Length: 246
Ligand SMILES: CC(C)(COP(=O)(O)OP(=O)(O)OC[C@H]1O[C@@H](n2cnc3c(N)ncnc32)[C@H](O)[C@@H]1OP(=O)(O)O)[C@@H](O)C(=O)NCCC(=O)NCCS
Image (tube, rainbow, N blue to C red; front, side, top):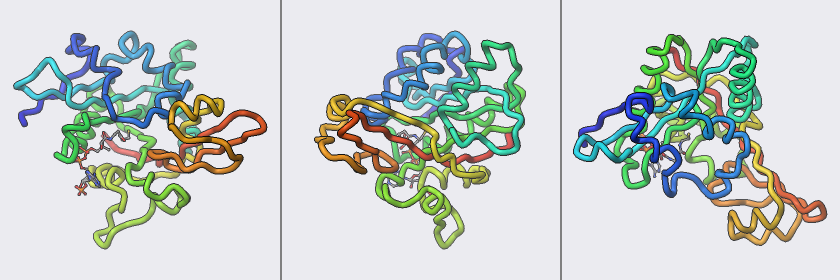
């Protein structure tokens, strides 16, 4: 593979790849309502923060993409509300004309047929370089550990700090970040909140959602809370804040 990486600002013709990575996410993940505050306006406001990777033999097709967002954050602790919170804050900052002082990663996704070939570290390095180019010295990331769905009942405060004999995280995606120089900062316990009626959750997952309590959903990092009496279920995804110096 001979890979090149560009921004959406460099290659606006790759725009159709912004919202298409078939199979990248479980269906329920596409129903986080906060995400639209970023993804629906990304071409307009954040084209310099979107990266596409393509194979030089097929420059018209993206094989991976990465997204960041600038925001203003002055508290010492990164927000417990993680991914949702930085998107909200970035939107409010933009509306109020507040200058950003920090950049958060929002997503790196590799096309399913290109996974397992080391592209994720390449994208993370390119993301960090791009953030430096844009004038920021720190990139933070509310990381979604990709091995966590196999351990839905383990608290993130335990899982995130599990290490192998070589000292690197057990989780593959956390490992990519730490190997790239990232430092685990903290857990953000309510990074993404996805709520729906029971009918919506049935449609998203194919599961019955017919009993009140915790429901294990494939691809979810923790169980979903189901309430039959009140006809709703809520997924509150914890992520792991990682800090990278650019
Ligand atoms: C998470 C993701 C970005 C990783 O990218 P990738 O190209 O598949 O992974 P890489 O080939 O770069 O490998 C990264 C690490 O994961 C490991 N890995 C790759 N595929 C794996 C699998 N199926 N099972 C377990 N580990 C795996 C690799 O061994 C490597 O770790 P190591 O070098 O320490 O051994 C990719 O799977 C993806 O796009 N997933 C969907 C979107 C997502 O979850 N993004 C992350 C949150 S924003």
